[in-house]
Length: 461
Image (cartoon, rainbow, N blue to C red; front, side):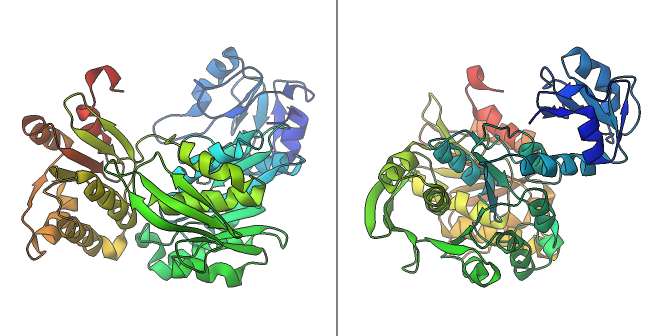
């Protein structure tokens, strides 16, 4: 963050300075975890259901924080505000407005946001200092927090934008308005909130509506709802995909036995062969979007193919593939799940089988609303269609996955529903062969415990 006095912070946030002189400067970063605070930083105290950040104000100051942003006095130097989340947003908005020479990139979609954000962070870093933090910092807290990681030297700020309703992305773009925006896809994530895929498209398109006339909107040419957003923006439109209407296009796509795609990249009459080091056929779309943004930001085409081949997984539990000493290959995609992202993971599992036995450990997919049962059944049918040998379905809520697979004509695999992760771990521990490929995916209900049980002991978290 840029240097600010407490008086400036109070003016920006509508707060008041306490226990300090108004000219006291914050020279470090902003943190809401006292364990991460650095010298000269600003500690933001949130009052949560289980933990009250105000109780850690003294610890933060002792660790080097210059001041505390809080809703009540803590006895420490700082600024007291009415509502810390709104104050953080106001602070982020003011800071980004003062950063000259900064290009803000916005990114949204039903799946692949975090992975594509990570790829962009790696590509844009070739052009200059880039902020693209690890993880999914895409909501009302994570978004302004990410903005506040930028400083005077930052050239690119990559912002992931999530939404669970109409107006959410518009709120985020009001904090930091992008000049380049990319919409990856529109799928079945958060249908419980949006009600329909068209409602999701309406919300995601708020990103391109916020772009300036001299900006760039990168749209997925292979997703009709995304490509249709071209009419909703003043910005120049750049289509990315495998369709022949794409400005940044992939042809001759192939996937090797390790699940790694390769393709011929086309743009503006030029071509180059791209060999990805990451697994999953869906990474073609993710890297095309990243490529289109990077080209718009100034990365030369001559460097792009090599750069794409070098991008890797940064945020944890997203298509992280590892092979154990006994030969078992594990696909850790356990961070989160919706029908679209689970379909992509299942396709990756099938591509990596090479005649080996495949097992998918699938958990509950949250926030599907009235589509909950059909969404789970659809995933099960797809697993059967792809020839997955064994389904281990975790929790009764996810049981329709098994029912969907069992309803598929001609499927010769097995499906079992278990009550919890421990039961799935027990099955795998007693029945893994050296040539197995195992996918683990679910919606944050500690499905990753199954993955961690499969890791060699020396590399377990």
